[in-house]
Image 1 (cartoon, rainbow over the protein chains, first blue to last red):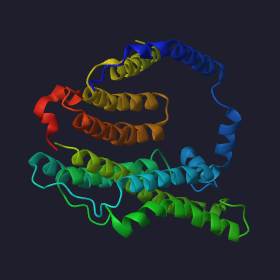
Image 2: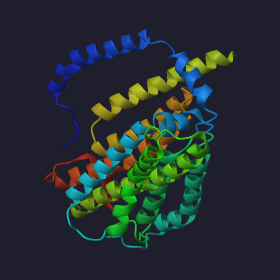
Image 3: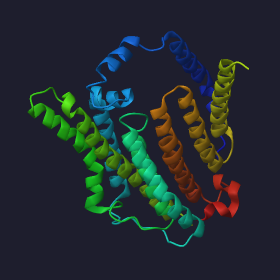
Image 4: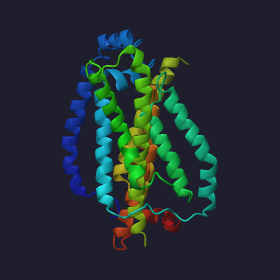
Length: 227
Length: 101
């Protein structure tokens, strides 16, 4: 397999042109976005628990959609665990590669701080659970490639718990709001702030664990097939 | 020079780079090269998101689109390279250096 595209793929070009044209035309037909929606978000921002409009929408107004995103991640993690099979604990790399381990030792603390910063900033500015979770996963991967052992997060019951906690966070919020007589996932302004912070924390953990699992499983596969 | 003209020119550059990278990823030989270009594509897409003032998405694109996805693509290339029976494959571009685990 040398990466050259077969000539018969050119047959798809007319279809590609048509679809591209249709997408461009659709883009031209849309306006700048419904200003009424933006005004609605801004009007309700005060009691939403976040001062950043994106966070308020993601975790409060459209929290149900974000919950389903976390479920999708959970499905991906489950599928990866299935595909990986019963190989026991994740095999770590051999320590001792100077550049990789040196880089990891110096960068990981900064990366972890960056993740915390992104998460903390998420309620009042750009950032949030997905970004912070991915950064934490990247930090863990730096450690892995540097030959450091990843304890706890790379297998077993703890990993399963980490994968679930994000989805569970939303579930707990849904149960709590329904039990309190509100509509499901309708946060009272008093509790919205802490609820969002709690859900973001749980989601960050799950996102980091899921991304880490997927990359480590793929790494296992590619190392198994190394000559 | 007018700021808006500069911004417009920059946007044209970014979009042009995205299209050029996409074509290069799809049509240049060498899977490893495509994988690396994919990571570059993710980084340019991050800039595009910033220009659209979608800063949250830009952050996510940088870490997930360029970082994690790029890593997965390189891992896939390694598996494909190892499973192909001796035929000169994508990793040939970097010789033996690319084989170090």
